[in-house]
Image 1 (cartoon, rainbow, N blue to C red):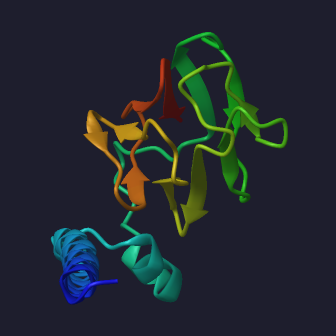
Image 2: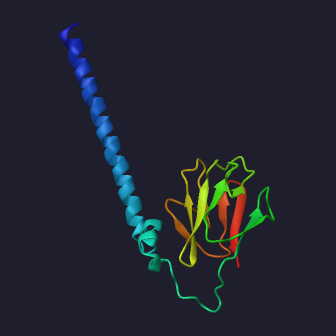
Image 3: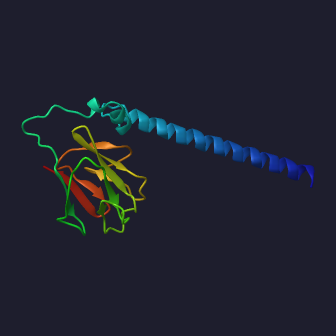
Length: 160
């Protein structure tokens, strides 16, 4: 090999290393931005797990606790699942608590779980995302009764 070829390969390798470094820095920056959004006052699921008092809100007379999960749109419209103390797995997989007959849902799409007196929903790395009141989830968020959660063509709500 000529010296020119070796030099070109070295510069190509150096360029590849810099691209890798920039992609790592970019990914870390995105993660930090998500973390800043989490500091907006709403506790993250991790913070709630460490300190359950963050999830607890004093009950108001007009506010009722959610007792069931109801499918309001999609192939399973009208289906309801009673809420207990255990998490609810949503997705197309047969082991899911609510098996969604939706081509846009992943096998293990999302998880609805209780923390204190509130219910939280988190996306489990689905392909098409999970939406809480038209906002795509980037972290676990609390779900209030009557607020729609969309997974593909399926819309679910918590009901008292």
